[in-house]
Image 1 (spheres, rainbow, N blue to C red):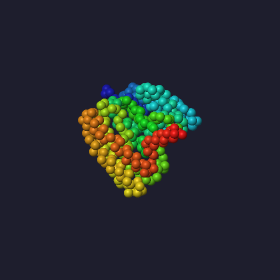
Image 2 (image 1 turned 180 degrees about the horizontal axis):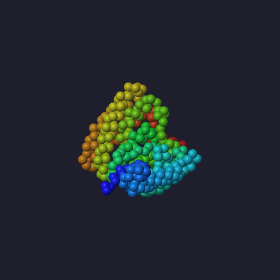
Image 3 (image 1 turned 90 degrees about the vertical axis):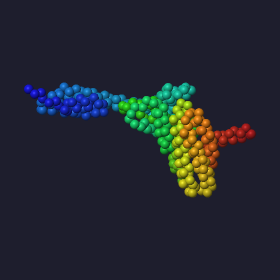
Image 4 (image 1 turned 45 degrees about the horizontal axis):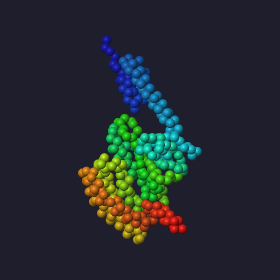
Length: 350
């Protein structure tokens, strides 16, 4: 006698159940196959049972992990009572303020001890997460330097969405926490972008409200954003360890400076008369420095890059920026330090 045909639903059930993302579909097809096989007389009851069992086990395990993750989430998040909760850097989300539990005297404390205490932003804290994003692509990335560069470059524009005027922030260092490597599976690719307080601990969120600036100040800050984003995207690794990252940054600085100069010239006519001169002077200086930055971007060796970049001189344009910001009434870097020094001199004289 001819053997009855094999149930396609039973085969599909087992195959799909073995694929984690499609396990629920495999479970459903297995149940349908078990109902239909006695009616149709097809073979494959064992395959349908196996597909149903495997799919059910995968779905049950997934639900268990979700429930466990939710319980873990509730264990570290802050509540309305203003109390602090324990957590890790990997668990932080946008808007969280925290203080690391590890000793700050150790080398790379964020990596060796990722445990943190999540606190309300109205209390002293060392860090604040200003944004999160996912690493691009679904392929495996094993090069930690490439991940680091993507993290730094990805956080730069998000920082300016959070604080359009980084110069006005207290002494903080933009940083990021990211996986050292990721596989092609569904591994977490989230990057946390956060502020690291270097001196005194903030007792408020550092998020800036655009309504605090007048239209001229806002126009200036928007014009300077391309250069400012390039500036904070400087690589963390020394040039001798990663020449490609340094030359890429020099290219971003050249293009960012040229774009900011163009935007400043486009907006200068709308500025008050006393502001137009300093803003034009800053645009001229940025244009003058762009060719030198492009030259550094074409360096073939670390020594050549250092020599060409040294010729650019970051101090070659900070004076023009200081004048433009002062004319617009924006805070200038070092202003608070100078006031403190003057107060100290007056106290000594008294």
